[in-house]
Length: 346
Image 1 (cartoon, rainbow, N blue to C red):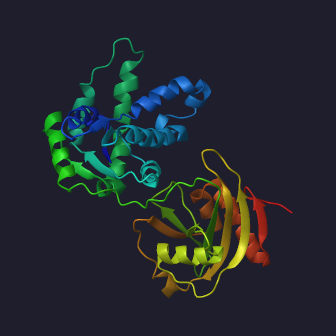
Image 2 (cartoon, rainbow, N blue to C red):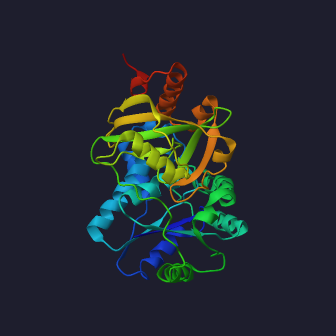
Image 3 (spheres, rainbow, N blue to C red):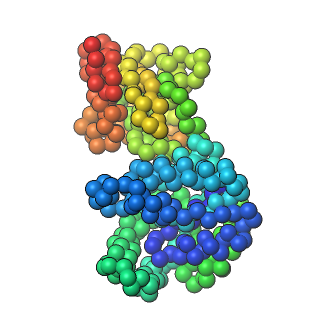
């Protein structure tokens, strides 16, 4: 189990976490800041200069997941993790990766008033030997207040259990969290536990179109980036039938006919991923009544939309977009295509 303490810089996450491990039996503090500090010694300065925040490094997000899983395997019990997460896609990637390892997360948000946040930032001690300490520490925290506001307005309060600790000491805040966690007031994050592959996989996606020929895209909660309805083919399952099953499970749309094949794309392994075959099928056009029956987002999906090919380019990761682009060309020509890493071969 993980108790993830979120909040803006200055909310008191770390001091609260130190108190909380004294209140939750068999608990350990894991501060992902240590991963970021380690990366400053491991990565070339040129790579570090390409990002404004170590959270923007995919390796940091991956190491947070792997380290948390390794610590729980070693120690058991509960990990208390004080870490600001203001981007929903990063939250999904990290919490989804933990869910894939069957690690439940209880998400708590420390939410003092903004005036209190600013007072705490202004009073924060800056190490005297740190060059540009005022700018690098206080200004950094001030600059992240606006992203914090945006996260509050869009997804954060709906996702995490809020505690206003503006008038509480760290111990009092920790006591509130411990009581809420043990009493069941903090629910386990509602995210699909999709096991990580241990070998190459076969996955089937289905393209569904609206009456304007826009393609249906879905935004999974358990991984970053938009996708097509679909998923991994189970042992002994026909790929097209797997696509039909996944469409029904994710969207509530039941396809009567077996969809036609558009592309077969071999996705090469990119450690730590294994790659495998990715198939896209043509699920046909939904009329307005069928489109209106699409399920609202649930544990698997945060959102869905119909997108033009141009709009999809801004939503899909590059390889998935190339797969879509060639699938649309195959649909126009009436002939399936074989791809390798999104590029037609043969």
